[in-house]
Length: 238
Length: 386
Image (cartoon, rainbow over all chains, first blue to last red; front, side, top):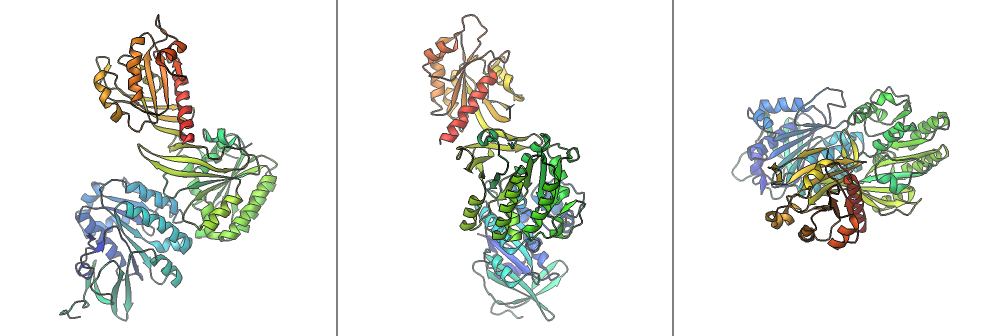
């Protein structure tokens, strides 16, 4: 069973999507489309009937909600059905006086315990499928250290697997030591890595079950879309 | 002696002697795990000095944490906050005591020593919001060595130290070292069956023999910590006074009556002396007998209410009780105010039970809480024997 990423050719590359209950790291420098992958993954989950949990460390739930509404007009409806939950680890810290029906506020990215327990409270419905979008692990690592975040992820990924949660975590390329990156990758079932090579944007997939190609593939950023243009199948032209 | 203010736990700890250190070791993911703040608040209320060392969240968050339980932080002049957070995240702070080097445990020691020296001999408690964070930030070995010194200093000033610790998957060697470093380790785990709650187990205590004692609890907002029993069933023959018995104990009550007879499962919450229990009344008509197993499933205890003037129903009552198997029960010999009511000893003899018969007049509330207290005691004995 696979969870579509919502990006057509990326799903082709992944032979349909990422395996259910797996956790995938989206590892990319800023501004080259990392967020688009996370958002499309959430929207595709909503279309497939999954509930979505956003864990946000760098923006308020309100901002995320607005951005999602711009991507899909049905988002407001999903939200009012209670199918989208936010764990907002940003607003309290910067003293935004936000409130919201579907939000749990965590005061600090150091308070990993609160983040974990808030997620657990949301994934209890039996038989329900969830998608977790965690943006980003980098903030957690910057405020403590990779080993502590590793332990947190160890616990969290176990819980997610038990509760039918497919997750995407983001991490910013260029912010961390190589050893930190390897430590976190070690806990993931797959990595979607993105880079900027001269004037080209490229991505590649590590892990994630069976895929068609593990090479770097070119992609284009077009507004809020990512379009894979590189060849990964005989007969396609780059 | 320092108290925790947590019902039952204080009985098991018999007070924390100054100089002792205690860790609440919490399984990650437990909902509402911050037990330390309740210990802090209890001591502030008792007029003792409370020092709260925050490293996991902003001192401003302390106000919010207190407000969750309707406590006003400004009321407590005896509270001192040590801010180990702001320097960590580069945030401004208004606190007087700031840990300048949050990656160095000695910076914590310095701040604490200054407070203790200025304290003027008042007894108190130092509460750390996150031992795990200190280990992560200051290095495990260095942190524990520093903490040993802090515990010692605290003791010489008449303080006990309390640590919240999230038991992330640390290495065994570190967990072993933690166990050696502290005088008491109290484990908190999640229990999920009929209702989610936390189980507290005393894993280590070096000043008495209560190691291994345990009970279930839940943190309610704004009420605070309660020893929690998620299901006690009330059974008994038709018209023995079950509903009246429940009403006499309950804080809230959902009746399901028709013409004075209960026709479905009633529910009520009892809040009494730090205990909270969910009580389920099961109708007494014969036709409900086959449903007893289902309706009473996962009960932690059973009240068997009998009409003390109707000994001919005792046999049926016993049959009801037998359906629950080996779980704690209390027989409530109700309607003691009516002429001809059999007394406790007589009920015992006729029902063939050795103990645990409590006389009651549910209409006036007499004996009702005596029965409740006995029940809670038996449930805890049963839990601890398992």
